[in-house]
Length: 111
Image 1 (tube, rainbow, N blue to C red):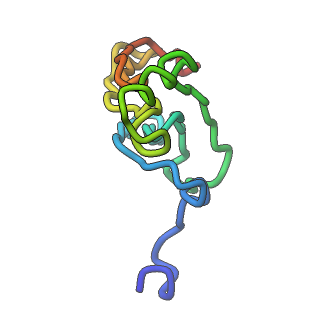
Image 2 (image 1 turned 180 degrees about the vertical axis):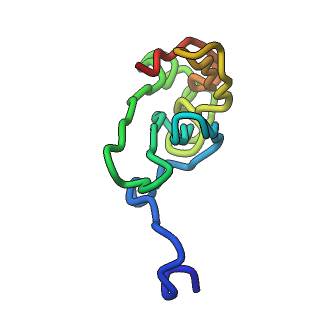
């Protein structure tokens, strides 16, 4: 209904089947951070498809292999699912992800 009434703008990145997990709204700068499978998106709040910035952050290959050897599904479990997006300061965001069952965290400079 929203699409038919032109009441929304769908995010075209969702066509990639990225299994979105977490969001961080930055109203002050008019942007939205989206954590997904192996990706972090930085979207413009006015038009989510305009100037999309994307960080590709897959799990390490050796961690994916260990995950598969443990009997986990390679497509739905052995990836780097972004779980935490937390403001750290005015320039950085703290990010944590599953790392194919080997969690890891880091900081992203938003620049």
